[in-house]
Each structure stands twice: as C-alpha cells, then as structure tokens.
Image (cartoon, rainbow, N blue to C red; front, side, top):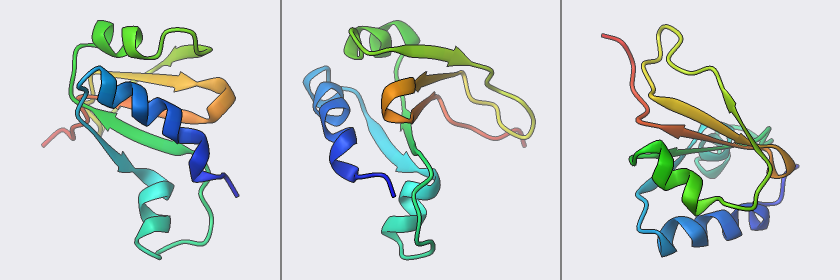
Length: 94
C-alpha cells in the first residue's frame, strides 16, 4: 500500500504555485471505499505544462504518452520516485 503522506509535498507545491488539482485513479477509488489498494497516485491539473514543470522542479520525472483514445488529455508527467502520474487537461474524446 502506498502511503498518502508521500504526495503531500507535491500537493504543497501545487498550492504554493496556485495549481488547480484533483485526485483520480486508484487513490480516488480508495478514498471512496471502492478498492482496498492504491497502485499509484493520479493527479489531474489544469495548467500549462511549463507551469507544472516549474512546480515540480527537483523531482525525477519523465513525460509519458498522453491523449491516446479514448483519452484526450494534453500531457502526462510521471514522478518516478513517488509513483505519481500528473495528467494535464484531463479529457475524453466524445
């Protein structure tokens, strides 16, 4: 099980940089008591990618493919050491 305390430094950085964010994926399902296990953290943000990268400066991250059908998200950044996926402009094709 992943400890939710691990994402708090990232959340603080989001708040310091006035980034709007929300929790998704297995973290959200765990919070809603719909699963017993958090696989990784999925955080959705609504900001330009350069603003996000400024906020997470110093963390080890990689950019992953994004926007593959049915998703239409703008970008996806993975912070390796914390197992956090940050998805910018989360959306679905419709």
